[in-house]
Length: 336
Image (tube, rainbow, N blue to C red; front, side):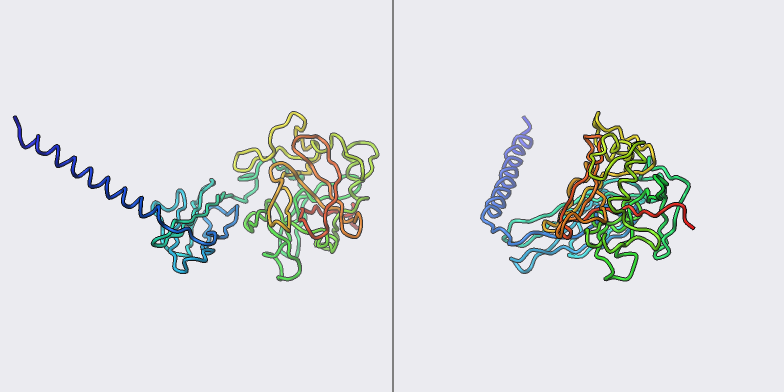
């Protein structure tokens, strides 16, 4: 009999019991820890350019006063980095990444916050696909942004959302916000305005925010017969919306009631709307909203919208200051 092997078994067992006991002790110590006060916070755009460097700072924990923040970025950091501020260079490829910040302090439970970030390429028909251009374009002299436009009902219409925002002009003119707070995506999705900002006409010189009459002209041109602004424009939501892909994923959910045929190249996208009070985006990937310059009453302005699960292009109204929506600029055609 090999007594050495026999004696080695209890030794291994003792080691296992010792490790198990140490783990249980750590669990017991952790179980008696205190919860941190506050919430881990950090700001990062929802969309960034592939290869872009983004700096983030974690904060938000009130008690304890001394905490360590550790970062994890899927596909970027193999191990966590311990620092409150970190600069991350995202891969030079299109994809979606998870970013987490976790706070640590002796004697306290950890607290964490996680967000997802999608890298994009703004080159035409790269990240955003199935968004046709008419061959007619206009360059905004204020910032150099180029817009494709289509001519319908005697009017030239942007076939992209207006992208004139804070990162492109002298701060203070407008407080318009990039879509999902992502400045790098402005060229694809535009920026979002309150009705009051829309009413001030942030469009380029010679262009305007469409009023109810302009919208009625668009509906009439698309329908092939006269429609009023107040009509629901049955069938026109499908004709105005593009079956667009973002990083090869459809942006509009499937519905048998809306084929997104985009007959006129108007290129409606489901980018939703903002709620200023709640500071949240809502309706993205389900709705598209665009302001009219016409007010409904002293507190509300009109907009038109498209919902993924119906083929109409109805009218709605909202607070002049409480929400933000997109703008499509328009001008009379032809130009002299």
